[in-house]
Image (tube, rainbow, N blue to C red):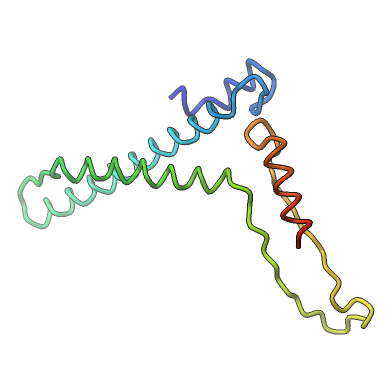
Length: 139
């Protein structure tokens, strides 16, 4: 439960949930562990519901093999690691062309950059911000 409360604990102790006193690796690890626990809980619920359904259909007790539970753990670890790695990477730039009816000709080819919800903090520090700005400016 401490892992799930890391934001609240940081807020109470340091005054912000993205405190500079909390190392980036600790924040990444806390998010990774939280994700693993959530996925394990979801997988457990799914396996229990499956066992319950099979038990009701077969009218006898059904056991979930230990290998399936271990496989669920490995999948949870891998999926969460992938998810966290995607969350902390420099976001890809995406170009979207929007046709605007009645747009004056002098605005043809006009470009707008939209950056939002970057959460610049200890987790997303200066090198990440610089790389994001560089990638955006390259567009």
